[in-house]
Length: 71
Ligand SMILES: [Zn+2]
Image (cartoon, rainbow, N blue to C red; front, side, top):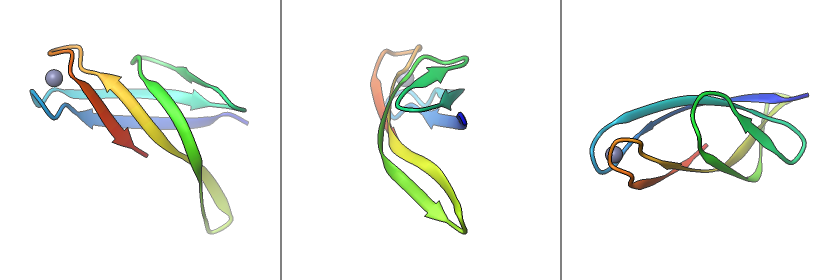
């Protein structure tokens, strides 16, 4: 089952706040409304539920600085 990932990333250069969601399925993800790269690094398990853990790379549409964000 696809897992929904919600993102709120503040650009470290200009302060622009970027928001988006993606669906993460088996070995791939599909961005919904914001274009970003997602690299899964593992899983977090708590209370019987697991969610994906990874690094997100997103290019700020305002100043084109690449931001890294961990989820
Ligand atoms: Zn920016």
